[in-house]
Length: 401
Image (cartoon, rainbow, N blue to C red; front, side, top):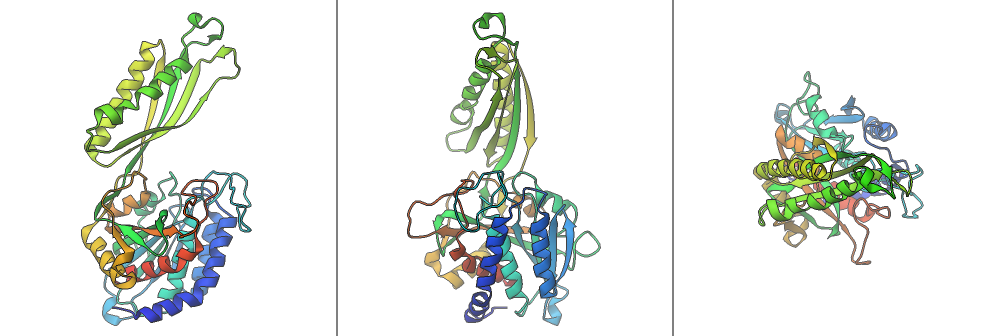
């Protein structure tokens, strides 16, 4: 059922000021993965005000809400779902905005405050429109490493009434992510792999502690860790084919207590990204071989904890082509990009695609001025409120398509 563009635009304009205030309120009170108690409360408050049926506590702090079809023949149809993530990051904010985080060391540096506010806005608009089929709204916890999507799926969030969900089972799901390098008012996506698989590692190198002046009396764990960190960069450059993609990054190193003591242990943590199962398997195999043997060659022992994380986010063709058709019609073809290549970022939206047809897309946040803007996971990032209206409309129209 096609809703008139003017009708949806008018409804969005009527809600935009309040949705903006909700977004800034969420930004001011960020919460980490599985601790989104206040955020979940805001969502429940807004859903209650709309009179929508909802279920809280799904996947921890997650909330799902149900809008039945308005057409009698649509009430037996499967539902279309929209998803937003709610959690923040352990970063000290440096934006200086009036609505900056009031929680030390925690901020919305990935735009999940914007995602949640836009889905609340979409709920307000959808509640006032004719709906040819049911719609499920998924407010998800713990995208930032906690795998909240996987947990919600396992608890039946998409499965419908009586199986952990609410209303009719879901047939297709749509989600978005604000994208600071994409111009404002534009959207982008692709059929097939869009975001990478994510695996994480913790490596502990154990040597023999000794005096810094007498390294020959011990086994230098720091030296071994340094060689390991350098050597694993050869995986992408020398083991993975030049036309394939893999990233191996170390994000933190912890060791030592004094300048003249070579410590017994060093630990380092990081992430591995890949786009294909065989590359994922090869990267893991080479990682273990390189780290364990490099440490051994330098008289140390390596212990590796490997955590299989999010799978590749794959956009199903039918749902994604439906999105492109809708976006071209709504925004104009010059504002819709079919991106050629996936990005090596990861998303637990990928788990939904293992259960239903899924489409994930990027929403432009970049204003014309200034040309250089903060990007995701930086301490001076803030969601661009000028993108809210486009994001709400894309969610609304995706749900109705």
